[in-house]
Amino acid sequence: MKVYFTPVKIAVSSSRLSIAEFFDYLTKNYNGESDFKSTDKEVKFKFFEDSQVFIVIALTTKELKNFCEGSDTGSDFVWKMSDDILNKIAETNVLIISKKNFAGAYLHNEGSVRINTFESKLRWTFRQVLRGKYGKSKRDEKFSIERLVDSDDILKKVSRLSEIDEINATFSNPITSVRMNGSIFKDAKSLRVTQRVGAYSLKKLTKRKELSDYLEGLIKNGCSNVSIKGTVSGSLAGETIGVADAVNSIYAMEYSEYISELNGISLSQFLQSKLFTMAKKEILSSALVKKA
Image (cartoon, rainbow, N blue to C red; front, side, top):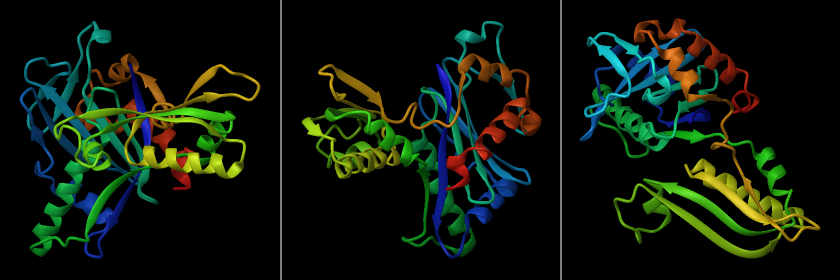
């Protein structure tokens, strides 16, 4: 298993509460507004900042099976891993965004808090902060986390094929019900879709660009495992291409390395950790993040 650095950008449409004001407020005044519980887990959010970035940490502890053994005193949290860390899962997600353009990356693994869930909790909190400051939030005041995608890279991958037969993608809630027009089970958490297009020719640049734009839209809307299957010029054998490797991750690290870096660190010391220093460097040096 890997931990992916998925590039994202924060967007806000409000003249009364900017992105900087929102995160600055949460850094100083957060009181559990985004925290939530389910039958087997509890997720707590923590907000930090330094001179260059805002940081959000989502801590997940499980009631029945504590993959991340930790000591939560209420004011601090200490990660404690067992010796057999390869079989332990540290449910810790981190959002790091630049104060310059509010672009950055979301660090996550396959079994942790998904971006869609993370976004919905911050969106709700954004409205709560507005209501606290002004009495109510307006319908057109919105908060969103947009996925960043390397358009040139997708077009390059698409251009490897002369024609395609299939487009594959996994849709996750809330995207599933929106895309499927409510025709699927409303509580489905994800839906794997295969679109068979039957020898769709990519010989023309306009067709390659059309497909590239469509695939980019899927990824930006939160789809994962996006791939296309087709043939290469001069070859009849089908080839499957992962359109955005690990959902366009700008960096990835082994899970065991990730939790080893967390081992023994307290939440209050996180900004001095090697993990944060490395992640911040990778994120702020990413061309995709810089040009967002």
